[in-house]
Image (tube, rainbow, N blue to C red; front, side):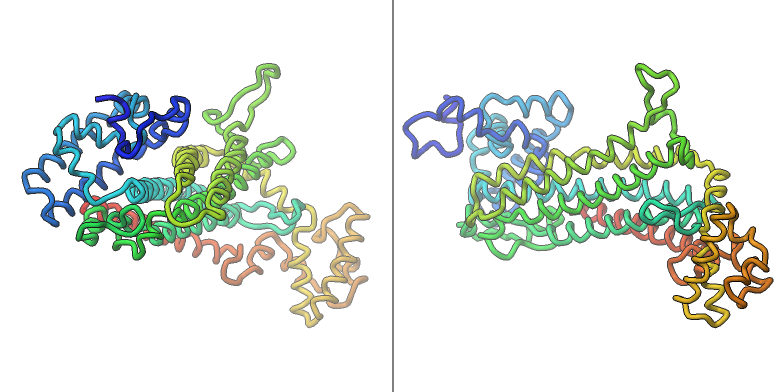
Length: 480
């Protein structure tokens, strides 16, 4: 059998493909990753063919067993390389058909009855992305738990918060760390939304107009763990919204990882000295013996560029693309595979965070200078009956005076303070202690010690719920 005869579409053609074009247009070099998904979808399609009377029960059993063997034969790295480097297969669908025919002879050719490669790639990509979403969510949970553990261990330690990268108000270290946990929990919710929207099965949509056989699409969807069949065959074969949805959701993951990496990189400098980088995740300089470089955070800071580039690539591929399937859609696969580093990145971040050292003494010292209690001081005057704008002005004047004296607000005498207004009393100094400055922020979501203690418990409960839901989701796939 010649190479041309092994193709899936040559009946209408008389001339062979240009060799350079043939090599250039093959997708097996990257879509080999979809082998488990192609096998799963093919087994489900075989079940539908059997239900429709196209395959006997013995034929169904033989095909499903052979498909399982193909997956097992190529599950190792060496086996995957054999798929990737196959000399004649155009894509993963063609590879499985060739392999099945080698095992079963003409029976292998019956599997393509009632389906098109246009519809095959759609469930394969959905299954692959669904698995990746679960891996990313698991990674986000691990990193969230590492941040939460650090927050719990920090107790009532205080640090400066920043606006415009200038010291603003004191906050609990736990409150700062929980800010990142909130970002990650939103990322998880976003990915869960993507998974819900994409969890519909395109098999049975045919090339564009639907299957030419009366296939039980609900049976296929159920076997693959999808919520239901897709509703429109034209949309099903050309839809890549789920790819873009996924990549855009990962862009948020990358953005949040990058923000954390940037802060840790800053806080690890001698100028801040808030954190100590774990040596297992740092490197040295080839020239300067004293250096410990934050290479993990630097690389993570850069990864968002690759993730967002993948999302932008798919956006531009889909822009203006007419219905339904076009070969352009083949180019939406590589951006998906280009971001498969994200689960490992999150695993590294979780372990890095768990081993990150905190210089609590330095953080607390920084939170007690620079007039970070000025907001609390203005609030004190508000409680004395002044309008906030007036209180703001009086404390601003007091800060300017303290700056000239090189003193903090709590170092001014009561006589000095009363030059700015008669409202100042002996109780002013108790109102601007570090503890009072924290605890005057008492609304939901703020940094008071009571609120943060509650937030720690609530956050742990939320993470446990997400973990439980993920286990149930994975169990539903396994039982599909």
